[in-house]
Every structure is written in structure tokens, then in C-alpha cells.
Image (cartoon, rainbow, N blue to C red; front, side, top):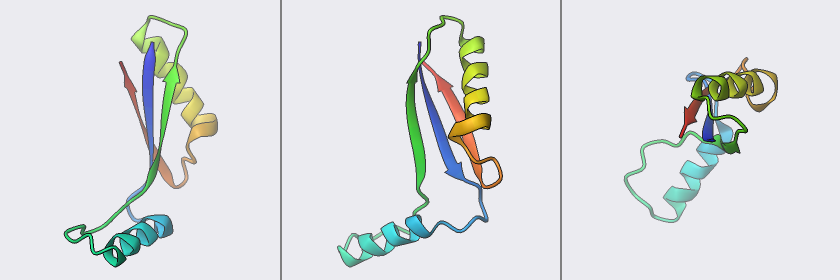
Length: 79
């Protein structure tokens, strides 16, 4: 089974890398971008056919390693 995990900074947390990307886009004259927030994407293959078990496993992985829950949120998508 395949899954995607999206990890993003919580709203209200400063995102210096997003600001740098935003500035770079402006310097490249790419207009119309109001703001940028960057995050992480993990494509994961799971050894189960049970979507609930896969989601539970990935939530545990996020809580222990993939996301810093003090400043980041995560979302798990099972496909």
C-alpha cells in the first residue's frame, strides 16, 4: 500500500525558508505569488493492505520521527 505524509509548519510559526523562496520568486520577476510556506513530503510504501493499520502506523511514525509536533502539523493520505 502506498501513502503520502505532508508535514507543514503550524500557522503562526515563522518560516524563513518560505520567505527566502518568496523573495527569490520576486527577484525572478514571477509575479502574483502572495506568500510561500514550505514543508516536507514523504512517499511511503507500507506492508499492509489494511488502510486503518497503515494510517495508524504512519501517524506513529510522524509522532516519533517525521514531524516535530511542537511546531509542525502532519497529514496522512493512503492510496
